[in-house]
Length: 567
Image (cartoon, rainbow, N blue to C red; front, side, top):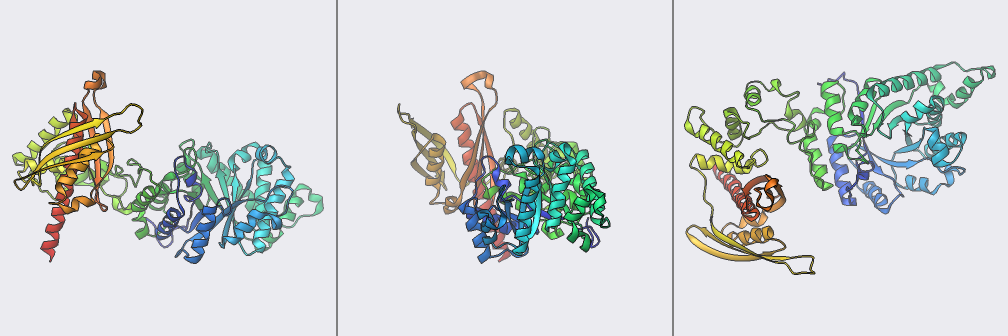
């Protein structure tokens, strides 16, 4: 819980630059603009937009934000120091940075002597000149500077004195933030803590020293680099940028904050190159709710889950259902004893209130469920069951019987709702499938095959026979069902089959194995999942597809009932 006196922590999001380096992740200009606006609403103070000049997409992105600026966030341009043996004033890439029109620029430079001599193929002295020249030039053009010390922790371990010289150079040149980067992601939390404390102590000592004489040798060299800082008495703030190669990115970032870092860089959902970056969706609630730092407002914190899912939707990656804080399963309870305890007091099995991060508690239904699971799940769907009556125990027994046959309702809650309605005698019959046939043509030499499905359905006592084609048997069957029903239920036209998963349950039986099919459907506002099980993959698919349409119609019917009651 934060208060007015909670220490301020600055968040820096690099989803639009570092996050897009994740393998398989690609975004358009429109995608980047949508994400930037959503991060702005979330209250992120610094949003790194990309490297202007590196590609046309980033140039257009910054131009569009000049026309339609964000409401509160600072959009930040990213770039490296100038090239060796040149000047910042004549460096073309820095002109692109200036053209982006941002107040803040993040410059990254080399901290590790190995990268200087092997990667840049230049001298250690020239690297320091590259840092100072670049920052001083951008400062002369009115820009404020965040300095990212690339490979900082590896550089510190191999050559502490030189790594610290790079920071001293950045300070003397006018950088306001020094961000220590664990670029390889191999540092452990205790090392992060120790090194950040050493950096803070060293910089405080160097900056606060009285001016020294020439006789002081090496100490005088540091003194010459820091006259402006020493005069103002201002110490640039430390930031942290961690990668997740050792599964330590979040822990390392928290360790750095505890050691004195005031800025945390990361990405939404931990997207990033290789194993990813520090996940802001875990960092923000940990730092704000547990460590007592002020990151964003409490209202903005309740938007975190929605923001996480929004970004995953825009970048077209499936959300991590088991992600801490924002995952669909983050506050899911499956065991009957757990559910019974949570029903009495959520603190028994929840470390925070899910509503604080915009998530919700879920009661999972499976063969491990007890009666308390069934009662709680029914209640979440507006169905009140009396535990003293036989219906509740019948539902539980039916659930266990079906799961022993291969059904899985914890991932198919829509099918479980239909099961409950049927047990209570209230399952609405929107239509009845009388039968179906599917014919597939596979022509040798052709990469694609065509399928034709014929279905016979009854609606209000009227039989309808329809046929439709698809690029596969399930697609054809789905199309035929929709074609047969859409004249009776026009809302079906808004239903989409958004995901289709197949699981072989007893593979040792070969092609005679039992198959479980999960079908996810949606209507643009909600998504739901249904399940089918059979030794015939088409029959299993048919069960799941039919229940998906049926549940969508049930939602529509319930919405219409509520609307009528309120009017």
